[in-house]
Image 1 (spheres, rainbow, N blue to C red):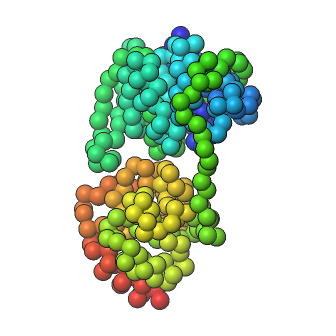
Image 2: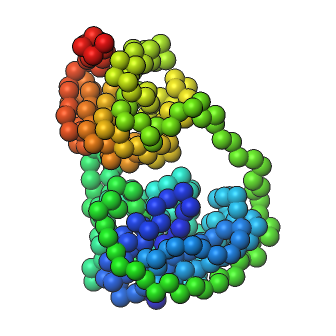
Image 3: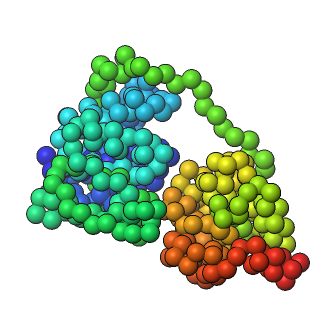
Length: 311
């Protein structure tokens, strides 16, 4: 079959990924097939799919990588698609390469562009933290992980919406891993998705002892303080203040990035801001590729000056 199989991650943007898949399915001469794997049968929406494969088994919810790898292997074996698509969500990072390895298929990650020509796929991927782009041609069938940024201006037609029950593989009854518990960090009364102004600090802030400088600026601007993943992973700010793929996706009127490098995972969380102002002493920092205004300077000098001006 010349189908495009799309893994549906509940935490991702399913309809945009299905819309992204539509021209690929047309180019390959097949259909858009969505895989929905969960603890219970049934999938709402998914108007962009021609076929919705539904697999239900208690081991599929809560999310467990080993279980979903088995579900994907069964779907790939049953449908034999030409392309398998994932969004680069947390689950997508878990599953895409593993699914390709298990099915013995080529894998291309971090795709920002993908097309099908003469039985081959041509993809463009970000490399070196988004500093460079690499274009490759891949024989089909193959597996691709797509960055969310690639889908923001893609539109697609509605599909047939046929529902097909896919039997759960026997492997789900004998998994080697077990879900123990989920952890939800305290929200501390912070909701970055509703903030009109955000001051975000990256690893350029240097250390926890310098966070107060950014906090003073945020207070003066009436903004929320946020951080990129390296800042959160270092414990300089709580998880609830993370912006990016594994944090909050924000659309403030003002996004002031201090010492943020601009990795693709971070950009995916803040590119919808109305006005992006970036301060970084590295003139080649990737954040300048998405910023409306950029300042090549020491962030501490800029933060002190801005705090004085708006206080």
